Length: 94
Image (cartoon, rainbow, N blue to C red; front, side, top):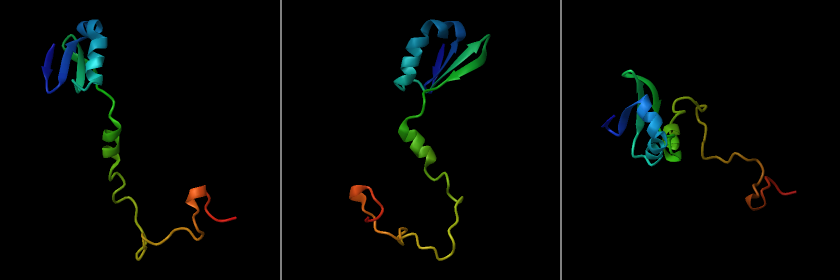
């Protein structure tokens, strides 16, 4: 078993014996990933799922350059032709 930069490389037999403890360490972010090896070769890599903040950071700017507005388009102009009655959840007065 070796540790570097919060990455743990561990033999499959040792991982089997310590699996729950290692997953708890991943969940607590004490490890960033676990590399499980068999006969010295990596066979699996485990990492914790991204946090909601990490997911949001990954999405920020993902559409940059993908959408084009017509020349002269005013992004500050109202988009509804009818009044919005937000307090009651209706788009217009009945």
